Image (tube, rainbow, N blue to C red):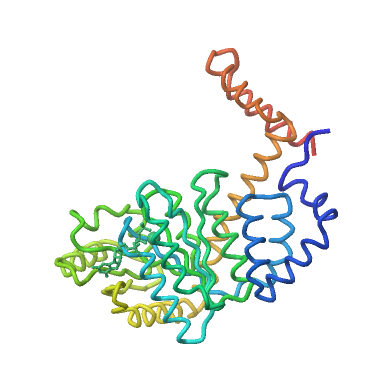
Length: 335
Ligand SMILES: Nc1nc2c(ncn2[C@@H]2O[C@H](COP(=O)(O)OP(=O)(O)OP(=O)(O)O)[C@@H](O)[C@H]2O)c(=O)[nH]1
Ligand SMILES: [Mg+2]
C-alpha cells in the first residue's frame, strides 16, 4: 500500500488526532493565540491534520475583511501596516497581520526590523502577528497565505492585513486573494511607477504614496493618474490616491477612510460576492491542481520517480506526452 499523504490521508489522521484537533479548533474559535499559532504552523507546513483543521474552521470564517498591502521593498509596508493596525485598535477592532516573506533577498535584514516593530504590539492581545518566511519551500505560497488568513478570520479577527513585497508573481497572486488591495509607491525610486509590476498596478483598489515627506510625491501621483486614465475598471471604482508618512503616522486616518469607502462600494449590489467568487475560483483551481498532483505523484509513481522520468525524457528514452497521458489516465483506474 502506498504511503498516506496530505491531503488524501486526512481522514485517517483525523481519526487518530481527533481530540487534539478538536481542542485546537475550539481554541482558535475562542481566540486563543496559542492554539491559533499551532493551527497556523500545521497549515503552513501542510501537515496531515491541516485539512481537518481548515474544514472544521471554515464555517467560522468569512467575517473578516482581508486587506493586502503590497509595494516595493523598503516602501514602508511594515510601518504602514503597523500604523493601520493601531488605527483599527483605536476603533475597537481586532487585527491579524500576516507578513509574507520578510526574509526575501530583496529586503535583506528587514526581518529583525519586523520583529522589533512586532514587539510594539506585544502586550495587546487584539493584534496577532505572524511572519511567513517560506518562499517556495512547499509551493503554493498564495494558497497557504489565504488559508492562514482563513484561520485568522475564524479566530474572530475583524481585519486581516497581509503585507507582501510587490515583486514576483507569488505576490500578485497573494494580494489578488484579498478583499481589498493597497498598492504602495514611494517617491524617488527612479521611474517610480514602472518599478512596480504592471500586474500589481492593475489590481490596486487604493494607492498609497508613502514617504510623502520626500521630494517627488506629486510626480508619482501624476504618474498614477496618467496610468488610471488608460485603464478602465468594470466596477466603476476609481482607486483613490492617499499620501502618507507612515513613520510619523500621517495620512493613516485618510487611508482607513478610503478603505471604509471602498468597502461600502463593494457592499453595493453583488460586487463583494463577485470579488470573493473570483478569488475562490483561483483558490479552488489551485487546490484541485495540488490534490491531483499529490495523487499522481504519491499514489501512482512514488517519490523520486519523477526525477527518474525526467532523466529518461532528457535522454530521449521516453516521450513526455505519452507519459503524462498515461499518468492522468491511471488516476481514473486507481480511484
Ligand atoms: N522618510 C520616511 N521613512 C519611512 C516612512 N515610512 C517608513 N519609513 C522608513 O523606511 C524604512 C523601511 O520601512 P519598512 O516599513 O520596513 O518597509 P517595508 O516595505 O516593510 O520593507 P520590506 O518588508 O523590507 O520590503 C524604515 O526605516 C522606515 O522607518 C515615511 O513615510 N517616510
Ligand atoms: Mg516589511
